[in-house]
Length: 243
Ligand code: ARG
Ligand code: ZN
Ligand code: CA
Image 1 (tube, protein in one colour):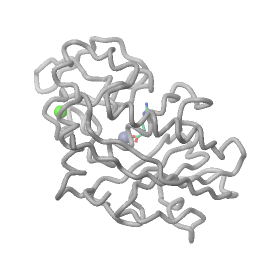
Image 2: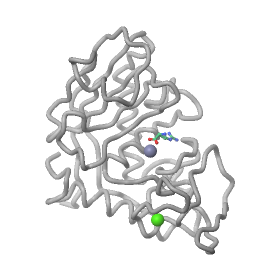
Image 3: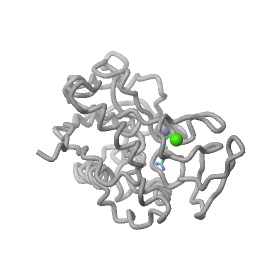
């Protein structure tokens, strides 16, 4: 009634070692992180600087409900961003109807890649969804400094039509008006305030946005403009309205 959309999630887990065969509890923990981050009930929401409070998303009104976890043992040690994990014929797991379910694939290792996602342009296709490397899923036992479940938050942002906050170019465009233009990505754990200049205008950078590249503990907000973009995708007439 309040317009909240609950997205049904299928987790497709490919494991080689027992450590990679993440527990149901660990997967539930990850879903909880998503629900907190998308509801702005994350414990670090109070770190949002005062200057960005007026453009913080608050509750995005998107939530996630785990429907099932599909597990499959594999001999594959390391995966790439070529979607092989998404097809049984290439050693992966076929998606559960991607027009109705948000599919997440978890693989043991992707070298230095934490995760990747499809944009709403891929809605309903066999490869639609998010891929996460197991060490960065959930919290308990996850791999620092990416151990607060925020790789999923970031990738789900992409799945719901968010670009990187720096627009993947020098002073690029993320198509969100209330995220300050950035010269490039930020990493690590920057100290606030952090300034940069694009087009002769100096701005305080919203490096604590989930769509930057900082550590999990350094990111804790979506903006209102990002919220609106995500809501448009799941609303009636949006590319992901069928979920
Ligand atoms: N590099 C990945 C991407 O571009 C994920 C970055 C996630 N960042 C994090 N702090 N967990 O999709
Ligand atoms: Zn990204
Ligand atoms: Ca912007």
